[in-house]
Image (cartoon, rainbow, N blue to C red):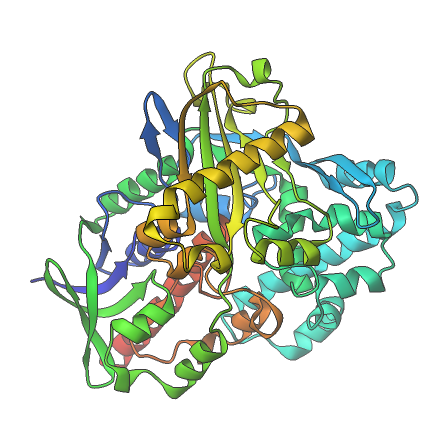
Length: 515
């Protein structure tokens, strides 16, 4: 069997990005995927006459041509071309403020319009919002510097150019908001995005939050015209054009070592010899099931133990394909957050309490911005929330389908109560994906597609600063949601590229040393 420089295991977002980066760098690269299609969660599936998007709400770091984000720059560098649709607003949120008063806000994209809208909803907030966005920009610039330094950031440069980033680096978003004296209602509106990272505002690092929100507001959000499967297939096609090889229906079973260095992968299709593996697999699975126990570094064992029980969001999504158009059903907004309360800590606790206390969901109707998403006169909607181990870990097989359906009925009821939109009687097709659905298809422990919570000591910045120490196994790097950038489409593409660049440097150094 042929030997490869790099084998990328898993054709999810991070794996696709890593494979392209390695192939462009001239490394002989093989991409293997246990399923028969690429993308993982970035795919699609059919029910009747409808094609359904399983996971993507929007991508925050693509951006317009005159203000490109990292994802646009990455895809351009890879030569991946797609048709994109811009999302006009950041979000609508229907909930209650922390003081119990009703909330119904629509926040537009663009820093100026966003601040104008905040001033309308929270009079007197403008000056502090302007200060906040200046801080966001400094944080974003500082992260870009740290990323470019490949784990070797100069502390003097950080202190001189990004002092406020350093001042806020150890604090939660809530503490920074309080220090800036942002009005509580403004904090409530700003906190809506917490669920995209799966960490409440009291534990979410400000730096991580700042980077995400600035990208959403300043560059707007985008979706591909033909579901996220279009992105995945385009990336695979480009990888093959560049000479890369792809094996579908190929499952990695064990990582092979020569001494303490990786030398290959055992799969259901046979052994593959290689010099490096980038594995889009949760590290707990790699260390616990796929490599010799004696080769797992003690530090990684302790890190895994420290992360025990700290899995991020366990996804539950209900999909509804309706026989009426969005306009006929009274749906006007693409992306509507429907939390029980804007208090993120209370909401997080309610979610973790299980479906009895979980009133949280995000409601999307794709046809609002893409009329061609489904057949004429129809629309496709989805609800997304988090699952709790309280509900799912001990659920019997006999109760499984009823419990899934009861959750979907609850979301439909909340939609009718809060938005006056009644989908019942118009549902032609439906599907429900529980945490166990995501666990089965994505090989994510407990269905935790977010990997580990990027909270407290294990936040994004801490992971970025520890790139050298966090990957001590020669020839093997985990990538994806459990990596330094956390979860999300944008984060996965960036993480895949970042990990591939590190592997390429290591391989080049070895080649130089062997000459």
